[in-house]
Image (cartoon, rainbow, N blue to C red; front, side, top):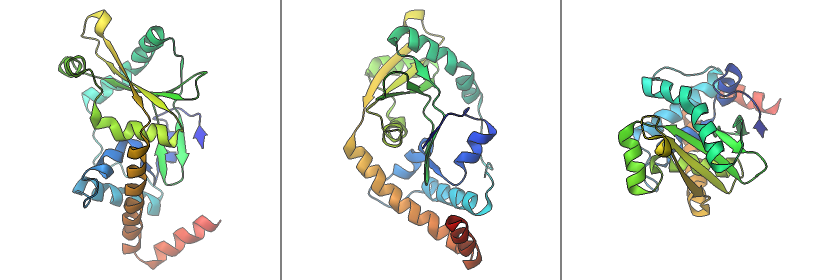
Length: 217
């Protein structure tokens, strides 16, 4: 279910509670086919704790100056993308998919198949985009999750660097939906869910009973 809400608002954070979100799927998919690493195990504990308490576990969250810069400049990047691609970008909102959640940076108006993921980067990173003529694959699972959970066929990866010459400030790479990757992701998430459930049970039967009663309401 897609919800047209403002990202980073209180309502948006509340909707994310207790859900594995696409921005964290890279942690889950690390060591694919092998045992989960510590980042995935810790994330499973975080999700379990939010399910149990109904409160956001923000301990350990770090907001860097680069992240603040990205949030500030994202609208500028989207405006430039719209002018260059002639694709009008609408709010990405929040896609509530049961145990999972997704927030793309935007959907494409009048094209039900497309979405966008925006990254504001420093100059060295933008150099790499043009050198490799590819997108940043560290976001590949997040981008495939956009297409899986949002039922899209493509996602434009937008890399924006205001320090570059005007004609090269915006780099766009279209990523197509990959069913093989999505199948691997779905299978891995099922195992991750079981780890979350095991963490919930660790805190006692009373918690498990409370959660069961809540789900039946």
